[in-house]
Length: 260
Image (cartoon, rainbow, N blue to C red; front, side, top):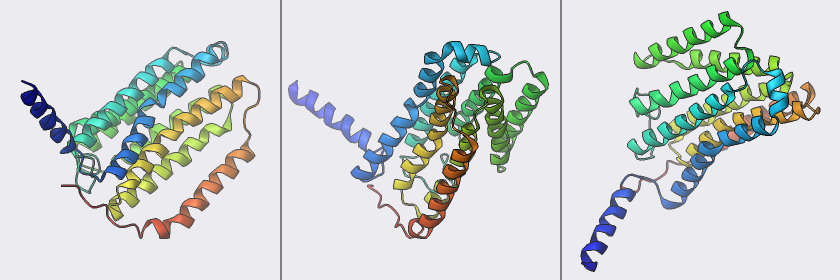
């Protein structure tokens, strides 16, 4: 019985490893980055809860911040599912990259719904803006499912949610989200070009850093010490300059060897 039990354990372990086509050090880094990304919405949850009186005073429907957090965490779960389907080794033409796939579509739609929830929380009384956002989300879904480039529509939705946060909390640092969005595309393009899978972890961390920016904006405004425009410009220029400086080196990264 013990031998059979041990045999079953070995087979299960082998089955799990077969789903991860990455060398162990790279796999640990990529998984750690995605774990941080999956749990990062809790930082926004804390920022809203810890400053609830201020948030409730400034926002139109503050309860929708919790709805946004729920959609964000759901999107992270769908991202894990799609990456697992692709065995965590991302190449052009896969569901996690450029080819339509169910889990990837649900990942993006949950992100879109989280942005709609943020907009509702901030300026839900502006019905024409909500209608516009729903329309943009529908355009994104149509473009994605039809195999056309959908990211411009997704970017419009991201800008509208960022602007709604700025109007609500009067904190310009929220626009740093737009910078992190561009950096996400920067690392994603490098990942597809070089096939260096360590960049997948960079994509995950940079993409989720926007949530930390929102939490920072809420907490800073509630404390009466919101970061100003100067800090926003300094951080944006520094991030852009660093990205440009590193690009030649990152483009020379070698493709990660496959485990199987």
